[in-house]
Structures are given as C-alpha cells and as structure tokens.
Amino acid sequence: MKVMLRRHQGVVSVYVAKKDLESQIVDMQDPAMWGGWIRLSNGWVLELPDMAADTRLPISVEARRINP
Image 1 (tube, rainbow, N blue to C red):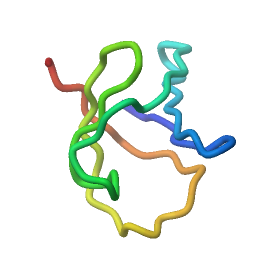
Image 2 (cartoon, rainbow, N blue to C red):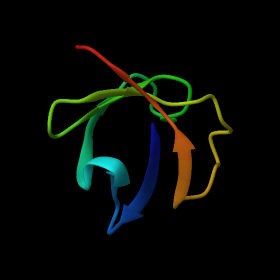
Image 3 (cartoon, one colour):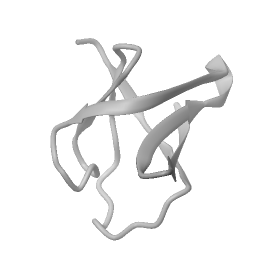
Image 4 (cartoon, helix red, strand yellow):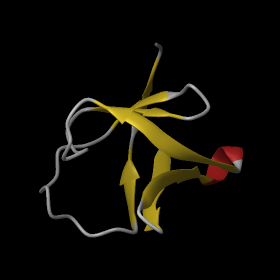
C-alpha cells in the first residue's frame, strides 16, 4: 500500500490515503526506520522499503502491512 511519511514538530507520522488514516510511529525495528518494520499508534505494523538513512521527509513509499 502507498503511504506518506512526514515529520511534524519532531514526530514522524504515516498517512494512508486509501484508508484516510494518519497515525504516529510508536516503535520501530531499526532506529534509521528504513528496511524494517514500524508500529503505528493504531496497532498496525508496516514493513518499509530499504532506503538510505538520510532520506528526507515527507516521502511517499510502498509499504506492506504485517499481521502482528
């Protein structure tokens, strides 16, 4: 699914347009965020693509939802 990641006042959030959902990241596998899973405040777990650690936000990426 296509998601948009953005940083606002130091907090990274994810927006899923198809679900009209915006949720904050509360946990992540890798501190660099890319190439691992992230957990959103609504309980969803998403797998993000492998990208450079210095990738600038906002950015739209293809993520895969993982069943927790």
